[in-house]
Image 1 (tube, rainbow, N blue to C red):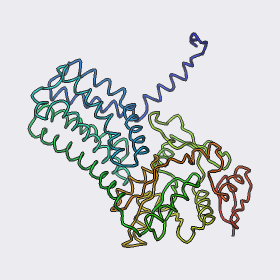
Image 2: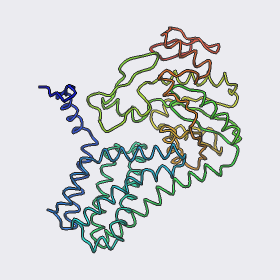
Image 3: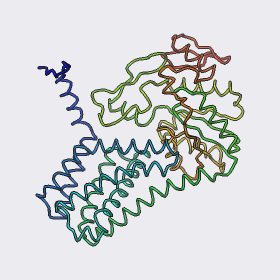
Image 4: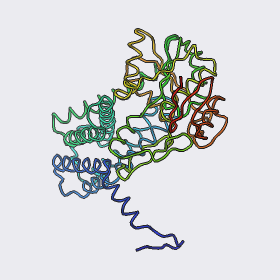
Length: 431
């Protein structure tokens, strides 16, 4: 059956039903429902408000809109990162909508009679409760993903457990129960100091870094373009670097897990790029492709980096590495560990931009010890995304040439005095 609106556009009910089913089955939706239910039970028990309409309404709203609220927080953080280039700014960007949401929730429950007013007063009022809840929530999410990146647990499961425990603590703490109240205050203030303290130290290191040492430049480089070369040149000059080590992303953890779960797949090969797509098992609340769906194979991206570096005359200052086994098990955290092993005692500098991928690398650098960030605000409009969409003049001559040969699907690609076998976009050097 099909319904037609005033503009005679048909509504595909089977498609809508399928999308709704995907939404209800998505891990993010289930996570939101569990967190909302745990929140309701905790507040209802601690504040004796089982039938309070305000508490019930807030719990239902949270269960339905938590995934959308999480997306808004992510976008706010990305905007602040790209606008200012400071970790602290990004975390404040994430904190602001979270605090606004929690402030509204506590205000509704407070004036709706769902909360013990003496208990709320014992933690400084509903505004203070919202502040501490936001800090605790940010800290728990940070810790959950920190553990996941180290192979402990599943990302969704870690966040679910962390947020549920936080909701229980907040509910009992705001009820004024002695031990829970002190624990709530300590967790909120402690996580706030941890999350913002780590970010602030990172920002300070980026501005007072000493000269000399080794630069680390990680990224997708899909493909390697003129701004990447300019970043390396500028960092070498400004930081007096002895060398820069470049390592491309292989298969990101997000994609590796999604492939394993059958949530994404390689749909086809187009102009040398592998085209990814989401499957019916994909979580509708997850952005699997923040930088696009077109990916050159890792081996090909490595070749393009080597060729561009050689053409730029930087081969004596730049080392392109490819630690596949280390990356596959530990990601860039493992690559940093290997660099430290090979260059003991060397001062390390992390090169990155302010886009989503760049700030993700920055987070990894901050977790791996006293590394000095070197951040550049991306304002030149040159991007790998634009190149994949057909923009010209953004890559070096040799990279442009190789991309043209890949588009033509030549079985043998020749560039920079080297010959490569082309197998479905994967370049392998011929001896």
